[in-house]
Image 1 (cartoon, rainbow, N blue to C red):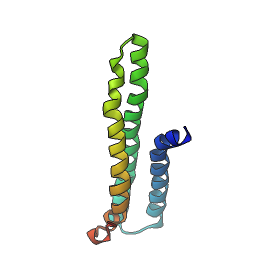
Image 2 (spheres, rainbow, N blue to C red):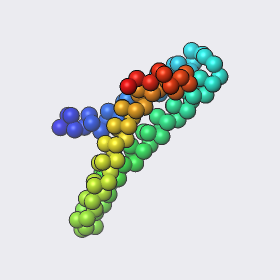
Image 3 (cartoon, helix red, strand yellow):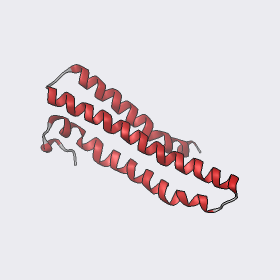
Image 4 (cartoon, rainbow, N blue to C red):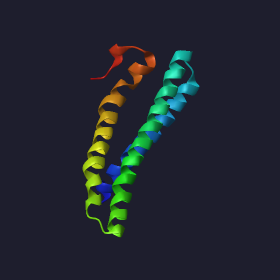
Length: 113
């Protein structure tokens, strides 16, 4: 059960620590272009949290409402929301984190493959 709950909380903790790291890097200085790109990455992390929250809320709330109303097909939302959460987490971990520094510096050679 602990691993199940951790799977849902992990994107929030990762994105929150990433935003703290980016805010610290923005305060440290650098060029104006780098600060602008760091701001874009902070916005991206916020959008990721909102997107994940929407799918998580749909996966929890819609089946509960369907049970109250007496409909069984409300659980069909899991067919959409769970794969979309998996996709969002995979893109965030495999693509975003390996390309973050390359985006900030504007150098595609820094991408960790």
